[in-house]
Amino acid sequence: MNGDSYRFGDVHGPVNAGSGQQYVAGRDQTVCQADHRRVLSEVASLRQAMDELRLTAQERRSAEGELRAVGDALDRDEPDREGAARHLETFTTRLREAGVLASAGASVVGALNSIAHWLGPSAASVLALL
Image 1 (tube, one colour):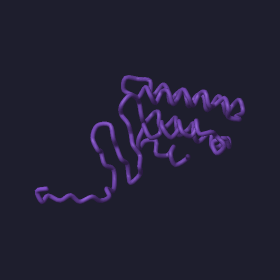
Image 2 (cartoon, helix red, strand yellow):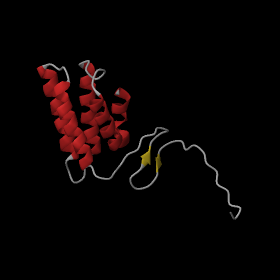
Image 3 (tube, helix red, strand yellow):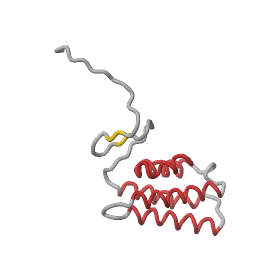
Image 4 (cartoon, one colour):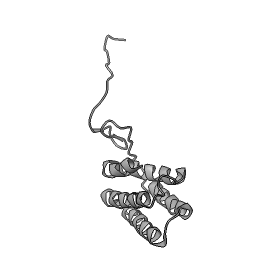
C-alpha cells in the first residue's frame, strides 16, 4: 500500500448511493429503480393472496379498489410512486382495521414489504403498519 488510509463509519440521514440504490434515514431500506414491472407482479400476487383473507364483501371491494389503484399508478411509463404509496397505505390500513393483517401469510406481508421498499420514502408509513 502507498500509505493511504481509509476510515469506515456510520452514515446518518438520507444518502443517495447513485443510480438504483437509496438508503434512507438509518434503515436498511433499499429502493431498486430497475424494472417497475417486477413490482406489478407483487401487486398481482397480492390480488391472489386476498382470496385467503377473511374479509366482508364491503372490505374486499374497498381493498380491491385500492389495490387496483396501486397497479394503475405503477403501470405507466413513469410510475406515480406517490400515488401508489397513498393507495398502498390505504390498502394496508384497511387490512389492519379488518383484523386480517396480523394473520396474513408471508405472501401478503412480503409483497407489501417489497412494494413499499421499491416505492421508497413515500411508502414509509406502510412499512410502519407492518
